[in-house]
Image (cartoon, rainbow, N blue to C red):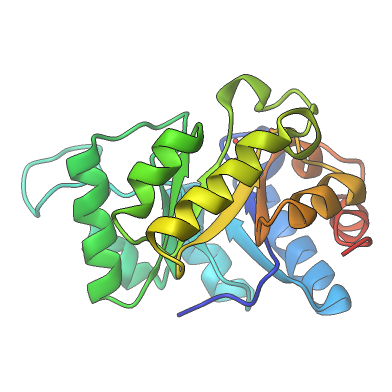
Length: 224
Ligand SMILES: O=C[C@H](O)COP(=O)(O)O
């Protein structure tokens, strides 16, 4: 499966405003904003909310993380095959709030390719974006952790990280698409990201905590 670009990937994380029934409400806001704007919008709920959202909406759904384990005694982990059965369309990997080893990232990227699912490897700077690109995921999402949740957009505060990641990743594998995230919340932030060569954004709090997530999403894509 591939996503139309530019793409908006909304990481629900574990906010109360994006959990349980509110996860479905947020997913429906994404679906409605995507239909109205024509921009691809993707939900990234907690594992427990994936099945519900896949069954009640028509939007692509990514897992926030998939454990690099084999079937058996791994209490509390989430098995790749279980996500497959839930209908998930792919997964984030190595988010700064859920870091993985390079070997585990490589294992899950390989499994997503075999299952024709989407992989989006999160990185924190140009160098880790280059390392991730060697694994040939569908997306690399560069996010300086110090900007996450601050409302200070990476596309305006650290444009060189975005531009540098795009050029270095494309030099390694032109098929890997680069997204950026951290502090992104407005139409100017997303327009700046696209201007820097990103093919979309990965974001969370600016939308999740908005009075109207749907209006915030429509504003986000209003200048691209
Ligand atoms: O996965 C999303 C990123 O961590 C960005 O989060 P944020 O939009 O709250 O800064």
